[in-house]
Image 1 (tube, rainbow, N blue to C red):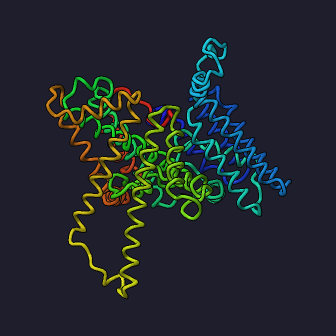
Image 2 (tube, helix red, strand yellow):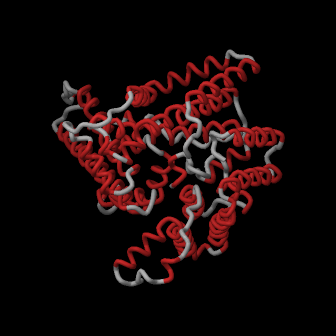
Image 3 (tube, one colour):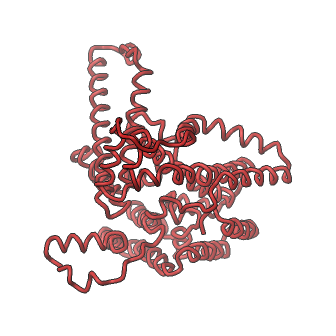
Length: 481
């Protein structure tokens, strides 16, 4: 039941009505759990028991740590192993078998290779990481009272975020759940985000997929260099429009229920370096990897910061799937982050050298090419990110290399791309540069409308979006992760 469907609209209207009819308390938590399970059950009913297993496992871990404080570390370690085992089984089972076969430990003729193909549970990575954060936070702050099983299950299964995030933290979520309210500002913001998310996904992302991206990534030989470039930049725009569109919808739906699930994107394609990009892109995953992987590895304080960055980003790449292309993608971004940190460290040493000479910060000579450096950083970062996205969309490394080479084959004949593709790519960048202003103008217009006029206003935009979109809307890209 995707957010873009009529079925979800009807489901949400019922849930929203009951949401505000009930006050906070056990009855509300039970209702929300039922709503969450109904939503997920319509998408993947066979995996409902898995939701209970992940929720119960992490709740039981929290209880054990409270009851056996001297064994907290051991209990948490076992819990992490069990959670990761669930992820590995569903995401990396076939890769693991192939690896063992390569080592000669399991012959290809073994019956284990004849098992039915394992179906991946939608949203597994997101709700597993979310549940893990609950156990790890409780380990770090043992004085906090452990939550009830009902609270944990509601947290793990929350329907606006269960399929593709943003990844929540339990204490912030539970606080809002028990004191939820909707201000006029949040109401208007929620409605705006729902319209913006639908427009990004249905009208823009779908057009790029249908009119350039699919063709370039399936048969790149049929396209000229400009056509391949349009496919590369088109997919860069598509994955942003698709995923940020989902995040807008999740935030908007949750805001109407009185819960703020957090901003997941902050104009990432305006970043001027890779570190800046990762502070703006998929913020909930970036902060999760920082708090629960990078910092425990030592961060910038212990060991090699460069090595810690490479490990974090490489594992972050593998989080997306059991393919070599994701590993290479993660490693490439790890190297990009490492180089960025080295440049920043060198700049700080230079500033310190000026300070040692007795100069104040405002007295340090400024480059006359500050604007040029900013634009250069933006262009370098955007192109690096766009070309590494090829690894996400291509079916394998060979196809990714073929697409990269096709973008440089200037003399090769072939198909180009519709002008509208380039206009949507430009609109994606323009929208990020002016997004806050557009949001303020849109909300300002909404606040002047009566309830009836507001309903007609929203219906108008929904009809426009439906007319602009294709007959069938593709699933959100991040549902596969």
